[in-house]
Image: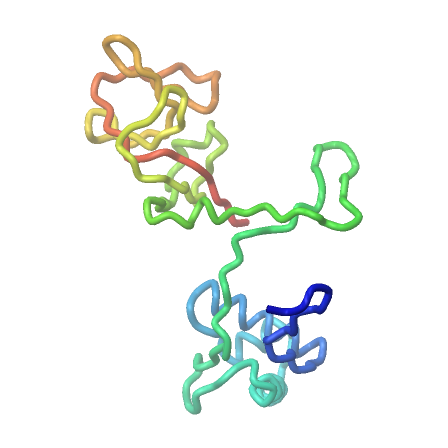
Amino acid sequence: MPRKGVAKPDARPPQPAITARQREIFEFLREKIVARGYGPTVREIGQHFGITSPNGVTCHLKALEKKGLISREAYMSRAIQLTETPEPQAALPLVGQLIVGHPLELLPEPQTRLEFAGLFASITHCCLRVAGSGLQDDLIAEGDYLIVRRQADCRDGELVLALLDGKAAAVKRYYRESLQIRLESLNRSRPPTFARKVTIFGLVVGVIRQY
């Protein structure tokens, strides 16, 4: 145990010094590998950074490889790998507040990170891609992803993904009444739906949209 007042030494090896362009290319490689599971080709890297010569891209890759940040397999177009497995990021810095029509209220230095791991960390969570325009009035667009926590019951007022009469899917707020179930849209101007048989697929806990 280290003595009080004495800083504990950092056991991690120091990061190698790289140029600004090498850092940009490394972050691009990292982003692609994390997002889709494999790295970009030399051509993709060149197109992204406006490097017309494949040799120019290769020089940067060789530098990153020499500094121990990546590894490459010969004669394979997508064989770029990170030497350290990247940890998925589930928290984002809170940088301010947005009120449409007003100046941005930005914090001089973000002090808080919002943790979103709760949307993904449980084995009971899954996602479904929205197709069609059936949820458009509820401000859920085609291509959005619904994050759903799988469970067969809920409390009144919770937003559920449900099957009406065992068939038609619906995203509604669920209310029990004496002889039937009342299902309300997120858009309160739309009339409620009533059903006798409702099968709950799970709770809708989030929506992810990528532009």
